Image 1 (tube, rainbow, N blue to C red):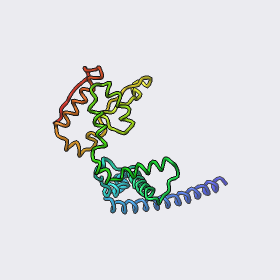
Image 2: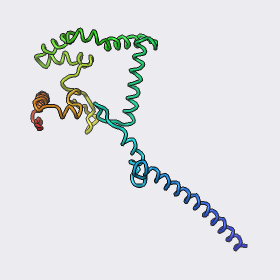
Image 3: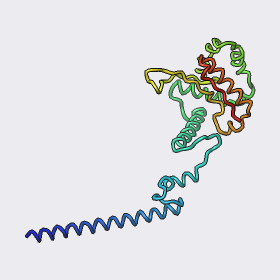
Length: 225
């Protein structure tokens, strides 16, 4: 009785093993087939380099546009959203899309003003003269402090950026962070084209800012060729 039960159990296990091995062999064959097709398309199989096998076509066909420093899935989505925004703004300005609140009406008015290049070309630099006069009138840090807030809120780029952030070494403290101007050498092309005199002038500005921080012992100035 026990022998029959044992033989029956072995038969079941053997049948199960055969079935499983059949599926495994089938899956391996499918994997090899997929690998061969991918290797033909990307010159690499997933087992050789999974990243290249998955992203090979994208890496080969995606190029940086003029002015871009990086490109990825998120930047592609952002570009499509910008194109949609530009399209919708043009439709709202032409009346094809109706505005639904006062904020949108004000937005469209600003858009029309910005796109009125005929008036902008006619005015030239005249609208900027009051701003330049304010800048030229700055003769002390106190004068600059009185203008800095209005300039930042108006969208003007200051010679440097100041932010208050949490100290990474001690989160119970705050620290004042000084950064370079966002509009200065923000792209590799600008860095390569910048002449030595421009870089030197900017370094001198940063040096003066450090001296104003009351920690001149930490000031170092390194000139790059």
